[in-house]
Structure formats: structure tokens, C-alpha cells
Image: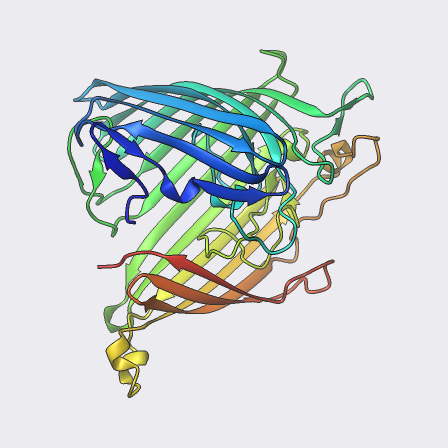
Length: 392
């Protein structure tokens, strides 16, 4: 339940929560996979999966590996390939994690149609090192192709020669810096185990799109930053805050822009907006703020009849500002060449939530309220989501 994997000798099966899923492109989806595990100090690790969609009658797969070359410098080489169906608009800070499939892509039950999906073929190779404690430097070379996985979603764009292209082909070089001061780990293998959760996370990255290399269609830079900080507030509980900001420099279509991460699942997913649909807003420049505060039972503990249940009070607030240029708007069309206009949250979209945590020790229920843009088509003013988790 805690790790998502079932342990066999030298092999972990999972993640078990990804065994079954459903989306509009694949219909019912089944998946099997796992990772090597000889011990927590393994110097190398392989991970892979095979999946099948009964709606599109197609197999998908992914394989990745990494090996620790130098223990002192924490020099790790990694690479992999994945062909899969993905919900690419589910996070702001982009990732080149080959097997990093998000929950939004295959949740069994969603709010509205989960049809804005992408056929993705992603290959990566790179290295990372830790020149100073908790400071990780990473360089990744990536090549991806993207095309729509459904007839109701378009990644088509107008090419420089005026033709309509339905597939994006792109080579990228990604440089990332990750600093986690105060993080405590154990082990010396290719994957170290983190033993505390009181440390901040600072990330900065720049991605350079390369044109005419391996068929790359666009030349651009994507600059991104993230800062997450936990706060212990005396007798008032504990808060988490996250600030994200980014900008795409250059003219690119939808598949390379920064969709504002909506959430049409029934799960509370941190750093997404629970009352937004996928691709309801799209940007090339953005800044967001997330707050989640757990009062630790300070209120419920004073109410007779509730004290023994050890419930936790949780509040949340989320806001984002974004822009999109006219040049990037003009590139997006449907397969027939008809323009598609995407809006950015220039008036600062916001929402808030109240929740009850520690239900049966493992569950939290959130009640989410949309703050503005209520006139948008199919806007959801209220929703209920939940999340499983263990807290000690």
C-alpha cells in the first residue's frame, strides 16, 4: 500500500495501482510491469512495462535503466524509451522521466470526457551528478514525437510552408538544477532513500528545442523554476507552499506550450487545479502559487464526539497567471486547417478548498470551490476529490 509495489525475489511488481485504467483513447487499459531490486544499495536498476488498450487494440511499452558510475560524485547514467498514451497537460514543470506516467492519463473514473490525450514516443539519454550534498545537476537529451490519440483533440499546426502537420517531432537538450537543503537520505546505491519530509525543493531548468536535428520542427527555449517549502507554524499545524514560473521563448504549437494543469480525476493531485478541465487554459508565460495547510486536528480536537476520531482539518488555495502570444495562438489548427483559439488566465484564475483528513487513518476528502472564470463553457464551480496516504 505504501510503495505501490509487490516484492518478489530480486523483482518488484508494480505500480499495482496502474494495473487497470480507462481513458477515451484506449478504453479499458491493463498494464503489467516492474523493476529490478536486489537491495536498497543496488548500483543499477532496470524498470519497464507493457500495456494494452482494449479500445484502440494497441500495445504500449516503456523501458528505462540507470547505473551509478561514480559513488563519490554520484555520477549516474540513464536512458530509456516509451511509446504510450499520455495526458501531457497535467503538470506545469515538464519532465523527461521516461516512465513518469501521471494519474490523469488512466484514472478509472473522470469528471467529463478524458479525451485530450497524446500518442507519445519519447526517448532519452543523459547523466546526473551531485557535486555538493543535495545539489543535483542533470543534462538530458530527448527526442519525442507527439500526435493526437483521439478525433476530438488536435495537436495539428500550420507549418512554415503553409501546410498542416498532424505530428510534432522534436529534439531537445534539457539542463536541470535541483537543490534540496536539509534533505536526509540513507544508502549509497543508484537510488537513495529519503527519510524526512521537512526540506524545501528548489528547481531551475532550461530546455532548448533543436530544429532540423532528427527531424526537429521547432527552435525554442523553455525556462522553468519551482520552489516548494514546508512550514511548521507553532501550534497551528503545517503548511506547504509552491511557487512555479516559466516562459517559452519562440513560436511553438500546443504540444510544446504550457497548458495550465487541470484535474478531471476524482483524486486530489497537488500542484494541479481541481476545478479546471484539461487544456481549459494554455500559456507560454505563467506564474502560479499553491498553498495547503493542515491544522493537525486543532479544531476537530475541541469538538465533543470528534476528538477520538483524530480527524485533520486541511485548507487549500491555488492561483495562476498566464499569457499566450498571438504568434503561438495562430499556429494551432484542427486537422482540416481551421483555427483553434486557446485562452490564458490573464485575470489570475484561482480556487480554494476545505478538507477532512486522517479518515480511517489513510484518507482525505477535499471540497473544492472555483473562484472565477465561472462563465467559461462547462465550468465546474464545485467538486469533491480525495487522496490516500499515510502520515506518521
